[in-house]
Length: 178
Image (cartoon, rainbow, N blue to C red; front, side):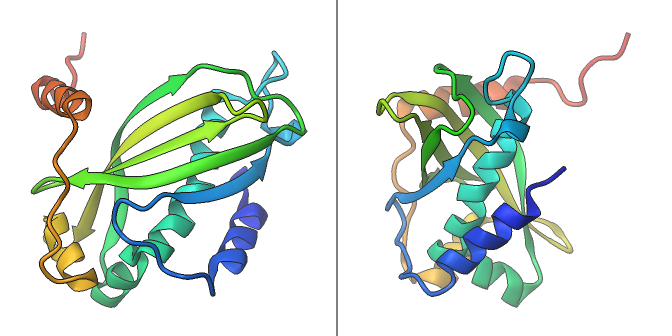
């Protein structure tokens, strides 16, 4: 089940906090609860994706995305992700999550998130390809950023991200059926 209570807590905690600017990192703290575990008693990979929501959604509010989205009756949907899991997160372990905007192109916003364990090791990392969507389809992210701050241009896309984006663009869609 989706962690609605945890999300409500994040919304309440962040509702009056200061805005963050593009490129600035948003930090949040979470606990790996027993119901977040898999059969190996570590954070379940699917649940990890859900926990990233606990960082990304308040980040969207503090960065100004949510305000623009609501005003224009748009939405922000995840259109792809590249995930790495490197360290186990166990029950009751405190997780430090970092979320930031990396850059954007004419179709997508790229958001980077990471989870850090109590030993200050990166336990997991994800890069989301997010799309702002309106009644007519995908909206150029620059329109969103223009409403947040005029003349704000995307930072240069890092090489490692550019390789993933090019690879995704070559990936057949829909996938072949047998």
